[in-house]
Image (cartoon, rainbow, N blue to C red; front, side):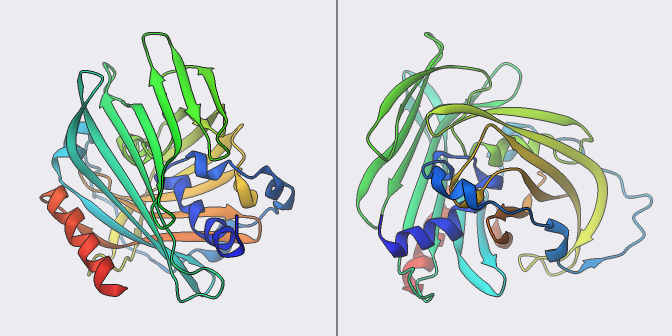
Length: 310
């Protein structure tokens, strides 16, 4: 892995603690030794005090609620004063996989090529998933495409529920089989899962298959409300805060331990912000564009904007 790719992965992959806890966070254990504790609260942006008494929390969304919204998201990833890159998230049209209709979640990560040593990097993460009997999203297939280097299916995790096994292929070309624990996922389905509980005042645990092993994400979904500002909205909006931590998940560049996420106090619990611990401080991920309607159309518009900016 060359220097610019190491820098890109170090800075940008950490966004996936909110959007996904994927294999990209677990391919280089060397950097774990460089982990330093950091106070996530030090970098908290300005928040707006408001009389929130009387504001009623909306009911928790379901997966069909979220899918029917046709959303497209664009986030900015920053580290201190530097913009490291951008992350786009969208739901693509449904597809048939193993004889069953699946939903298709796409996360696209693009580096800020104006920063020294980084250059243009683009990675795309895909998940085919469906909703189980408990109303939870479960993954059937996850893969990563390294688009800028034209390396397709660089990482693949395949979930076989008939045999209760998880088959994987990692970046180093190793393959293997793990026992399947429900609701099994390989990563960025957390972008949907976390919204189901945000603001609910409950604790949840999600099994995640990362770097050839099983780990967990623990969530504390606070029901406390806080007003915050985001570029995607003209006025401050009410949010819910979720605190989380990783269990047996250790990624590169010191990603492990605590993370914080903020969600909108709305029917869909829009993911607004994440703060992720790195080996030197924290990366901040904030929503800068948000669209509802036709997700496929919004996704194409997002790609067009990217091409225009090149």
